[in-house]
Length: 537
Image 1 (cartoon, one colour):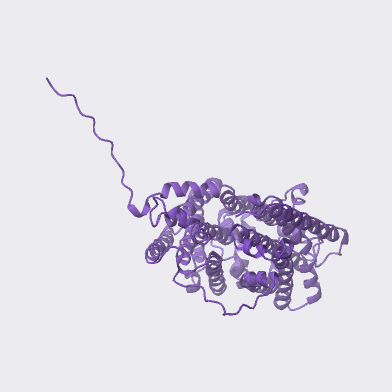
Image 2 (cartoon, rainbow, N blue to C red):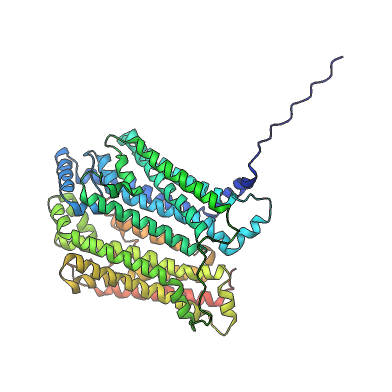
């Protein structure tokens, strides 16, 4: 009599000890970022996918596209701003027009995601609690990188599917290039997160790397018409250009992205294994024995100082660049009826130079709104991390404590626009009063977005980060909406479209005063909510 067959034991997949718990942490990270990640993926994807239709209206003939090709090749300033043009098809024009900026947005998303799930978790103390369980030493870092990979893969898939009708090879190259750029800066953030002791410093250093990459690309593209400069090849943004989507793709350039991600990821893993949880290789310098900050406002100024200086430098540089490009771009716009129509929708029915300057001041104001939101939400971070509670336990009221952060948000955004006006004047070389007024007239819309952030933080701190979505929606509406000839009802959803497009247009005070009053009302209502609710921790 034969013995019954013994069923084979189920195969057990053994996870390396240091990666135990990675899947659980990945699901948790995706759950936490269920609002943040779709927004950051959707914005660059929509910018890319909306561009071909607009370009078809602007350059619908082969002769018009060939004329643009020669204009870009002969204009170093234009190449520095956008990049070299490698082909005359609509797909090539799309990769040229928005590729660098969409890649910069993908890079920003990558660095924010990785820092949020590594150094932010350590700084808040949550990672120590998680590490006390059955979690591997490198599980948190791995899950953070995988979260960035999921976002970048979604972006690559959306772009590839959306542009496939223009050519599958070019769509795949552009989609992979955008996703790979996000991974490069995400893995760079993983390295920086091991080096620094605070999440704020990690974000600042990685953002500085992104700024340096943009500057290298701009400098290299200004010197050569085909992106072959050594400075361009030193920048990951330059690699995206030299991948040449829709212009005889160079698939081997993807190897540069893969090598950079592999090297930086290996470095991050090596550094993570050589430090204690919460420690860093670049510890924060100890302060003086006797403190010099005697007020809540002084403390807020100290916390925001590095951010404000970095934003100010960026706005000054952007103002100088845009001002120096005014005459060149005005000449190109003058030759294109479609381009003139777009600038009229963004900069008003003025001369091409005035319309371009009005468009650029509007774009800088939308970016200043991002600074205002970030500064308001810094108060939320101080509260949730527990650092605000000891301050408020002393004889310090909530309104006085919050006033320091709000002063930076509103006065700091005004400073950014003043700096932008000075940069535009230096680059353009004329009309300082007009350019400074064009920048300052945009402030009520900036403050309205900041006031909404205060309202959300005061009454519903759990949803305070929705203010990011509002600011990004305003940016997307102002950037893509005019190019798509969006309905006026859609454009009017952004507060920036209600302000007079200076220079070149008469000042209309009712919308300026109305938006200023709205910003004050939202801010006041938010402070009432902050005073009435319990602190979160």
